[in-house]
Length: 269
Image (cartoon, rainbow, N blue to C red):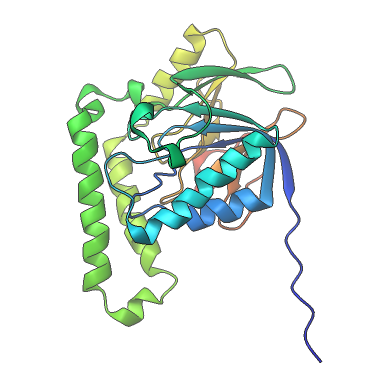
């Protein structure tokens, strides 16, 4: 007697999904997880908060199909009536240079103001313009991309084959890169600068990406929300139909919790 087919996970509905730093094409990108998440989570509005593609690396044959599937899913949702908003990040290629098959059917923008269901208004930006000058360098961005890609390839080659099957080996690499990233942004001064920018725009908070450090708090007087990324943290932001923002763990398909969370709560969720 054959076993019954496993039940499909129910599709979750969101008023808005905010995703950033997919870095499609990069060695560390997890287009497979992004696609699985998108298939199980539908939104009325998809806010792509920068670095969706990665101009610093070509799409290899091994990654192209999965990356193209993510782009095609978003294009299909747009054709079905979902709203698609694309903010350009520091790794995104110049839109006119993107091959037609990977081009999103909307104009790339630098910033938008998102009005939540409860009427609160949020400035949405990628966030790289608030970097310190030496980090904001285009050359440094490209060097960092190539160094990370080389390091991931080196680890893959150098590690014993049995280590590749371990569920933790990728996590060790991700943890190392996360530690370097945290050191570059020691003190989290960018959070205060982005909140100050939101205050100048006379809105209720800021939603960003770029820093690969998920966050959701209001310690500077306005809401600061960072989507995280899909290279190390695998997180995004969701707005429910009451206008509340939530951080979502894309691997576990779980919400970290309602309301405002500290980074410590996010890290140990």
